Structure formats: structure tokens, C-alpha cells
Image 1: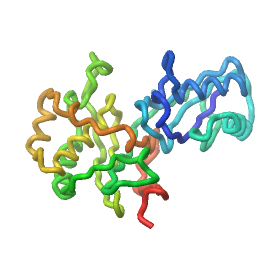
Image 2: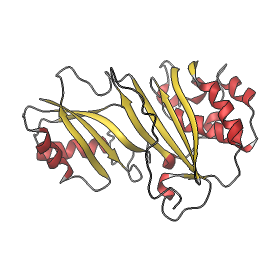
Image 3: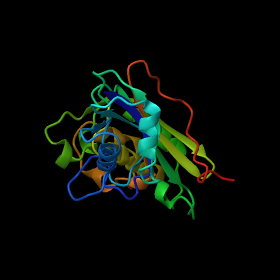
Length: 260
């Protein structure tokens, strides 16, 4: 039996989504819980890997097991035994051919920058002390939209030998009180690509880079984005898109982060 699972998690204390030896991962903990609470033959696969310290608002995974249970029972069995920083949002029956990663058509991420020091949200933002020029950052966002080679933004240790071309469908900036919120949507993301794009845009906002410099990064390989990789704390996997899905236009609410 196959189930489609949507879950949220705080990635602060995890090595990322992907299961690893001698490290605590979201996938590993979810698989361990499923095998204990549902069936020893359970298998869990996710829509994509998130790096250490990166969060998810709606990661998608599929759970495959020989047992057929009501989806509500699967959800309760998992949530009752997972730590509080991992929460199952929904469980539904899935077609036997469904694969969380292979069937995904696109993904979107949110990155949050705080313009002030915060007592409550340090784990979920990047506090940038310098004033940022939003208009210049918005102008440079346009450079990334469309189909480009993101070799400069890839982690060569992980993406070695893989294609580095990506279709970027959305690259937006929104100001909400003391927050600057980026939304990045693409066919897929290379390892650390989202964080390196944000890091470069911040340098544009600081005035140390210009739009022309950003354009040059897409014309040929450069080590510059790696130097400015944004920290994982501000990055959230927002949405995984499948056939027929549309990118959400409404920004998610972050109650502890918004001005009161």
C-alpha cells in the first residue's frame, strides 16, 4: 500500500532530510517510526533533500508498506511517536505508481531575512545588519528567471557530473514589517543553490555587487556564490508541485516573526 504524506519540520537539529550514517535526519526518523508503529517493511522516500538546518512547511514523501490502514490511523500513529519538531500535516492513499520525487514537477522555497535582531526567531531567519537596497535586489531577481545554467551556484562535491541547467519560474522579494521574504520556484534546485542565490542577492542589496555581476555568474562558472552562501536557518521548503498543481501566491504566515 502506498500513501502520500505532507509534513512540516524544524530542521535546526537535523543533518537534513536525507538519511545518513551516524547522523540524525528527518527521513531516518520518519522511517524508524513507520517501521515501529505501522509495519517493519515500511519504506519512506521524499520529494527532495533539504540541507542540515533547513526547514519545511510542506515536504512531500511517500510511505510504502504491505499493510493497508486508514490514512487517519497512519497519521495519528506517526504524529503520536514523532518528536514535536516534526509534524505530519496529511496522509492520503496514493497510486501505486506515485513517487514523491520522480513525479514532482517543481518546488518552491521561502527564505527569510530579518532586518533586526530577534529574541524569538533566530533559528528561522538570517539577521542581516546592513541596510539593503530592495529595488536593486528586485532588478537582479529578474536575471535568474527563465532557463539558465546554474553551475556557479552548485555544490560541485554533490552535483558533480549532473546537469546544472534549471528552469526558474519565480524569483520574488516581499517586505513584511522587519522581514525581507524571498520566494524561489523552479523545476528543481541544485544542492545549496537557493542559499547561494539569496547570498548573491544580499550582496547586490549591500552594494558590493551589481546586476551585471549577477549576469556574469550565469554565463560561466565562478566560485563567488559559494563565498556568500546564506545560512540554512532562513530557508524553508514551501511547496512541492505535481501535475495540475499551481504555485501558491499567498505568503505563509510566520506569527513569531511578524511585527506585532
